[in-house]
Amino acid sequence: MTPAFDANHAPDGGLIDTCVHCGFCLPSCPTYMLWGEEMDSPRGRIYLMKAGLEGRAEMTDGFVGHFDACLGCMACVTACPSGVQYAPLIEATRGQIERQHPRSLADRLFRSAIFSVMPYPARLRLALVPLAILGPIGRVLWTRRTAGSERTRPTSGIVARVRAMVSLAPRVTFSSLLAPAVPERTAAIGERRLTAGVLTGCAQRVMFPQVNTATVNVLAAEGCDVVAPTTQGCCGALALHAGRLDDARGFARSTIAAFEHAGVDRIAVNAAGCGSSMKEYGALLADDPAWADRARAFSANVRDANELVDELGPPRATRHPLKLRVAYQDACHLAHAQGIRRAPRNLLSSIPGVELLPIADADVCCGSAGIYNLVEPETARQLGDRKAGCIAAVKPDVVASANPGCTLQLAAAGRRRGEAWRILHPMEILDASIRGRF
Image (cartoon, rainbow, N blue to C red; front, side, top):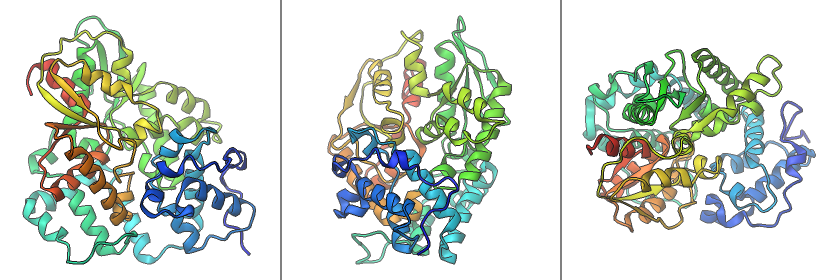
């Protein structure tokens, strides 16, 4: 038998052994919730990791399938009473899979296409041009589903994946694709509190440039000099969560260098998945003597944008009233991976007239999860529809989401229900309140 793992950054046996197999993670896991199968739970996957590490399991299609089905939402981390660090375990396992497992040609080509386009804003803009030309009609033609195609387990055919990709794409126009970037430097309004760098991201800057603009506006209004280095690119989050660890390390080094040269006190991130990964740079580059210390120092200064504004203390900028019923959706990589729940709620609650609406099963993933909704579209669809039902039940005026992937996922799920939700980042709502215009 050929062991599933080699010695190149295999899952840490010490971390694996912290799991006492108590089962508290089971009801928190989206795939276990859907299918009720032990090996599609965090506990089951950790058991498989241990078997692979001890040479009792091979890297078969079945073995890999249980890890491909994992959303990496980290709800199990919140639920675990033993403090199991699941993130480095699943990332190491996926790194082994990406290096060793011979995926099908179609799967390899599809994944390669994603990672050849999404981390590069210029390429992503070009890829979205057909949607700007075809508009909503093109989306309907591509994503029309045939009768009887619903399944209870994931489908991964190339047609289903392409339909998912198009159905999830934002409604773009040529003007939105050509929207100018935020200024490289924006001065604080009033006395300066600190200098904040802003990650403009790859998908965020192309699909949701208004979120970056709002983030800069809010930080400046709250007394921050804001720097958005033009040399920055992708932070590597998508690659890290998919097991493409060498790519993730390369993106991490470039991101660190861009912000080091900018001379900032804090780095504000308005995408939950990106912030989670950037806070892990110290671990990601721990074996690189030239970058390990720089990575740790960098990660110590990374803040989610909501977190940073909340940390600044009593607001300086006046909040004008907005009479809105807001359903705030917890992004998994904000609530579970970063442990940030109160900060965005504090900011939204600071706006006179805003009513925050509690959502049932708020801790359950919406199905976005990096590229998960592209490579496992049917499972993602089921979770998206479930989340959309919970949101629809509270009848919000606005849905707030702090992650671009979640925004795309919720918008697609809402369209399937016939909902026309306006989905905004908390920074957009706060910016509108500060400016007095919604």
